[in-house]
Every structure is written in structure tokens, then in C-alpha cells.
Image 1 (cartoon, rainbow, N blue to C red):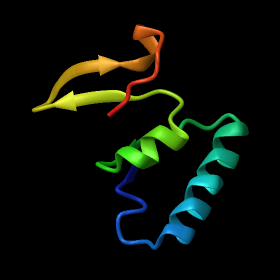
Image 2 (image 1 turned 90 degrees about the vertical axis):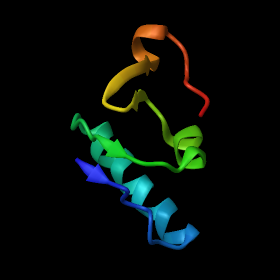
Image 3 (image 1 turned 30 degrees about the horizontal axis):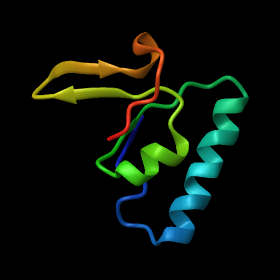
Amino acid sequence: LADEPTGNLDAEMAEETMRLFLKIHEKGTTIIIATHDSGLLRRFQHRVVLLQRGRLMADSKTAGERIAP
């Protein structure tokens, strides 16, 4: 579980961090990332769950499509 893992990083370190998460994911580990960075979501999303005030608003896996924040 990563809460805003790239929030205080420069662009280069943010990309490196996300590439590391992708490598971990490719080995079969689920990673949950909480972020407000819509650009990050567009580049790296596999499954996105959108929560608003604690309620599920959208789930890209059940919708069968990517959520474009």
C-alpha cells in the first residue's frame, strides 16, 4: 500500500518509482497506490478504483475500460 508515493518526488524519481512498482507487479504482487496525480494514473494504471467520500464511484476492472481522471 503506497499513499502518494510520488507526491514529493521530481519527475525523474517519480518515473523511476513507478517503474519499480511495475517490476514488482509483474512478479505477481498486488500494489495499491492512493494518488491525486491523474497523469500518473493515465501512464501506469492497470486497474483504477475511484472513491469519493468513502463510496465506490467507478472500478475500471468491472467497467471493462480505463478510467480517465
